[in-house]
Length: 218
Image (cartoon, rainbow, N blue to C red; front, side, top):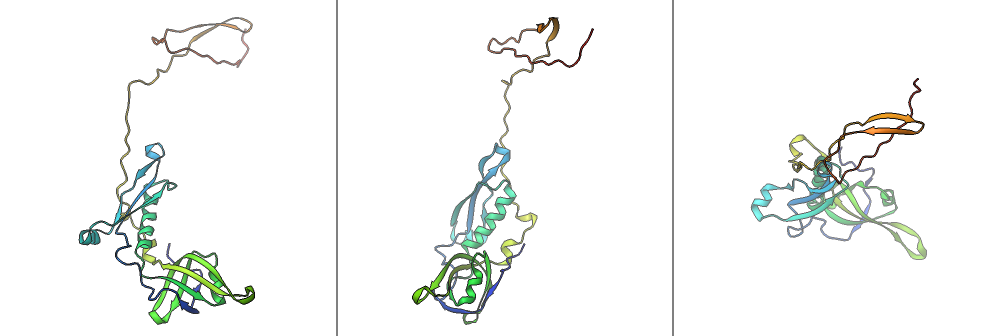
């Protein structure tokens, strides 16, 4: 999968934040910590292997962001989502663009392309917010689109990025209920039957027998 915008905007009228650079070092994250739905832990939330920029961590310490992916049913899927979250926390460009009516084509899109030659921008962006620009008399004039860059690298994946899944904590106990032997059944008359079986050895256990007629015998 690649970050390909469904459409490209090349008619930007203005930019609300200037310049549209990425987040500053104080608001970025070099480590993403997350939980996911672990089927090996009786469908409880488990900690995934953190997604970390080790070089940046060694340089300025850990700057972590905690997220929950409790609908992710596997560690592998959680790691993919964590990678996307890392790129969201470290975008090259962040901006709010005002466009003409051509920008309306971005309504409802998740990824769009934006060309803005003034800053040499020709990239794919993830749409964070979309608002209509209304003029006098409520006439629609364009759109205000809040975006941040999302590169193809965020969607590229290989097995080296799987990380180490948590080890399931399986415990065994000796208090399992015993499986009783089938009783001997002697049909006496009509619906009456005599059952014989050895005692369970546990006064807290009772027998419950279900039966159905499967054949007539002489």
